[in-house]
Image 1 (cartoon, rainbow, N blue to C red):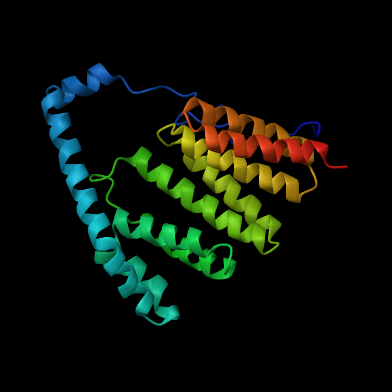
Image 2: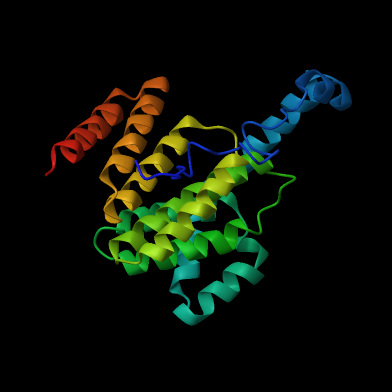
Amino acid sequence: MTPGWTPWISSLGKDDPAGPAGPKPDLDALLERLGGTGPLLERLARAQAALDRERADAPGLCSELLALPREQQPERAAGDPRFHTWGLSEELLRRGLETAEADPREAARLAELALTASARLDAELHATPLLQDLEARIWACLGDVRLRTGDLPGAEEALREAALRLARGTGDLLVEARLLEFEAAVRKAQARPREAAALLKQAEARYREVNEPEMAARVRRERDQLLQAP
């Protein structure tokens, strides 16, 4: 391992009070301020209902946005409140991931649109840690397609942005595992195979923690191939 190297993902929260190593909210105090579990459950129910509606509307909104001339799409995504929904950001991310292998430049464009929309989501409706998880996933997608086009500096930038958001997210181990895989891909592209292998080992552990044995096995095979390479 390179002296002084610190993996972005596994070091999250060490210096960030908002990250995993920082102070955690006092759930009992929060419930007391809300007047008990009733108001909290009601808010969660409203948030879930809103999310269900947004997801149902997302394919139509996404098609409407992408039907506009390309040069108009970022401005409309930023300025039209109808496009400021979780569902639309998630749909743009989904389409970007589906497009990544065949057309990485188009996938990058879709991920950038998803970031534009996600930056304007209502934090009162969607909890901030969940928004941070969503943006971490989008940045990982953007970084992956940058890596596919040989843009290593751009991929490294995306990795930093994703790590910052993961540190302020919910602690979702699936999101963390995905970012560990992405960081491993960056290190592999930088000809740093042992660092990449160490990251894949961490990703495998995360997948096992959330009972995803197939993903864990896939990452283990990739790590073994990396270590066996001359």
